[in-house]
Image: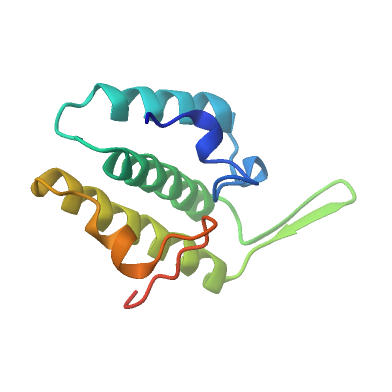
Length: 126
């Protein structure tokens, strides 16, 4: 089974396009292509972790450069440090899963160990 862009966006995946300043579909397409072409990633779990790691890292970097509170016309956008910390934890978690997958033959051990159900992963120990 191969990974696809649709695997990463809601309702099937974990990402929401409103979180990204760039076009999420274009970014996902690029990351899925990179993951699929990299021979060090031998399974879809590792490829999926790579895409999520890239997405959450990009999101965290974008948020760090934006003001925590900004208003454009009648719309106000506010984020808390807890929200930023959550996205940083997600980036770190998915990086560990990705690294585990490329550094072992089995790959992707984290997902099976913590229960990967309905794309709602609990991240113990973060």
